[in-house]
Length: 386
Figure 1 (spheres, one colour):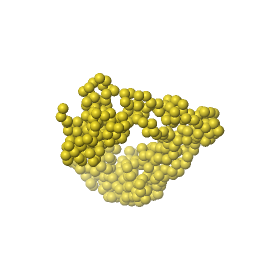
Figure 2: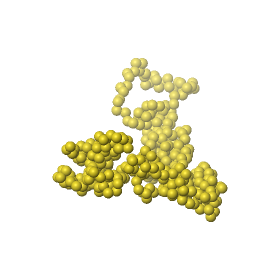
Figure 3: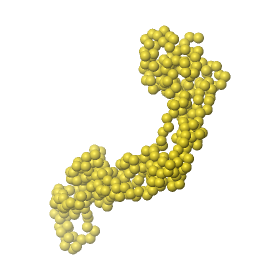
Figure 4: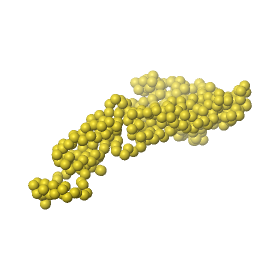
């Protein structure tokens, strides 16, 4: 039977990357593997065909020869009659072996192949999350805060080893110290994590009485956290190595601090800008005025109200907003929405003055509606929602 084009066999384009080729081969290998299709000769042939295609295309030099000369350029580079996993099949064996190791790892929790491939890994401690609530003023200036929380810390009695003094550890008799238990499936050797030593390859002869052999104990700790100026709700800082300690001396996890900003009675935050509302009188709006307002820093600044100021007008004061988290010396702006306070009660003299003004100025008994503009700014849109 005539051979099919290798790219066609794997279902990839001629410009496919090595990762794409490897992914396509793994999919076909899992589908047509003889152990999953016992007695199915057609599946076995497809498995061999895919393996041959992968062997050539996964190797840059062989692929170059194939692309230039076709099957003639790679003749003899693959021996289809040999078992590719017997150790004497073809070059490119290591790549295929590695690919299958990844596949079977996802199904059986371990690698496969010859001894010595598996590497024992100490289990890193888990990360911790601490939710910190701070005021908007704290977010402006930053501060140092002491927090107290529970975490798994290295056992002081056994110094994190998990064993009583002098007892030490020995190779796990169940897995022979490899951390894996192997079983054969066809011509594969499938490895799973040893249940007795949990993959460490060692067992403790005399566990520490304080930690029960884990090497860690629950402990309440206090840490000083520096709140950076400009921090916003939902943002995190990560303190490396301050999470739970790893079991039996493994690396500790990290401590994540997630910030939540409490609402301020007078200021609303929008990214690096601040928004506030200030009441003004009718005469201040009509005649204009200079008024004093307090910023988030607590200082008093002068704000000029222009004559004829309309209700809801937004005024901006530059660089009086929030500091930028990445550049605290640079600050956003402060936006002030002014609204005109209408007195609910008037004295006799106040009423007389306003009635005189009405007589002089005149009143429009049938006002024309103001045209609505669709070109409002983002900030104006925000204030329109008030």
